[in-house]
Structures are given as structure tokens and as C-alpha cells.
Image (cartoon, rainbow, N blue to C red; front, side, top):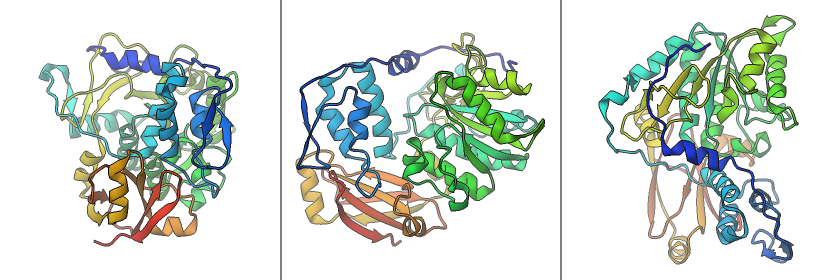
Length: 397
């Protein structure tokens, strides 16, 4: 059921989105890669860039190496077909750094119906009486996860108790008891903003579950998994918020949302934040467009970035000085060091915890400031490209 008639323009991001979903694999034989993670052995160049990155993405203690996959992808950019390389690179780059610039470009005022708090209010008021709400994301745009986190409180107030996430692996059976994501929780939950969403939901009182499927009939199996998690016999256990990958909330074209409706008789409210990109300093916009590519109830343009979110929530500012030897090395070569910020208690309980924030150290940086939620004690770790810990300390205001 379409609840909002959409009116506006499609932009070049749609073309990019299509490009990034192409699956083109180049088979390279006989080429040798030197792995900096295991410097004493050579490995054959994998057949696609995702395999190249994944082989270096985990350290021997199963913590995440955020730098080496990006380094290897850049080094071997010419060895792979462009569309698949871009897809791999953008997804791994999204994990590496939490910084995201807030655009300040101007747009015509008549492009927008509702903006900022008005837009958020519109989403909540539209969703409050629904039984199932589905919001999508682009897997390489971290701010999409921030919007999901923003909606948690309001949806909870209207009875939502389940959060289904495509990004969460079902085999992490201890997630809700533990309260935070670790390396094995999922590929995308290794990214700080996705992990922050998981943590916030569990703390608020949601039961977080995974529902993804990699089989041949993926979309239908996703819908079946959601039905299995939120139904007891013929009764819905609780109002449910679903956070899905891009096209899966399409109510047509054999996608998950369509299958869910057929299986349960529940017509989900579907909110798309992927199809359109907003290029203004506005926080959030409900779009009115006449030519949507997929069938969803609401289309929004999301210009939320980490700094805007930190402003809204009065995050604490922490400043750290970079040791001279590390700053000096960072001058000579890019992708040398990453600084990961952890909730101290989480890291003590499990060193595989996902950081709350990552910062790629840049040339010339001798001091950095980060903004983190109040109410926690934090630690930070500086690792080099090989994953070696160069410095570990507690953050002090």
C-alpha cells in the first residue's frame, strides 16, 4: 500500500547505486600478493576484490584490521573490474573512518515538503500505529544507521520491541545478553555506527535479531526468517522495526517486503532513504517525487552526519595528542595508523568489541578531537597497518 504520493527528481546517485550492485569478477592467475598481515608468506591474488580484502580483515586474535584491506584494495585496483572493485572499496572504507562531511550545498526550497524535526515527527506519526516498519540503508553510507538509531526511542514509546537487522548473523546467540556487537556478530556490525545502533537498541529494551539468508531464494527466506522470529503461531509477538539493505524493502519485484506481506498479511510501512541524496545543510527531508524506481511508502533524503548527530545530543569532546614517533611515520605514507575508540568496559569484557568511533590518522595530525556520547568511560587504541597496537590508553577529559 502506497501511503505517500512521491514527487521530485532522480539524481546521478541512482546510476551509481546501480553501478555498485553489478557483479563482475575478473579471474587473475599467477599474480602474487604480499600479505602485510603475514609478511613471511605470499598468496595468490584472489579472484575478486572482496576475497582480497577479507583475507586481511581479521587479525590472528579475530579483532578487526581496518587498514590493511583498504591498502591492498588500493594497491591492486587495476587487477579487478571497476564495478566490483568500487563496491568492495566503499564497503571496507566505510568501516575505516567514522568521519562524514556534512554538505552545505544549496537547493531550491520548493524541493522539500518537510525538514528537520518536522520530518522526524512525520516519520514517527506515520509509523506509530503500524505493526511492522521497514527502513533501508546503503551498506556504504554510515549516516543511514544514525537515522535508524534516532528512531529507536520514538518507536519504542509506541510499542515497538523487536529490531530485525539484515546485518546481524543469527549465530550470535549471545548478542542480546552481551549487549554489544563483536567481530562475529556480522560483517557490517564491524562498522562503528552499525554497532552503535545495535548497542542502543539493546540498551533501550529491543530484542535484536538477524534474519538474512544467502540461499538462492534469498528474499523469500528473509521474509520467512522474520516471520519465524516475531510470530508465535498466528500471533504477532510485538511491533517490529526492520533495518534492511537497499532494495529489500521494495514492495514489488519479488523482494523481501513483498514476500513478508504475502506470508503474514501485514502490510509494512516501508521507508526508503537510499534512492535519493540531499545536498543541503538540512537535517532530513521527506521527498515528493513522481518517478520512484521502487515501490515504497515514503522516500526521504538523509543529510544526517556524525557531527550533526553529535550536535543534537551534546556529545562530549575528547582531545588526544599523537605521540611524536607515530605522527612522524604518518607524514611519510598514507594508511599507516587508525585510532579506534572503545567503551572501556566492553573492551575489557571482550577485545573483539566493535569500536564506537574510528579515526584514520592523517599526515600532519599531532592532536585530534573526537566527540563521543556522554555517560561512558572510553579507551583508545592506535594500530598500524599490520594490526600491531602502537598505543593503548584511557580517555581523560
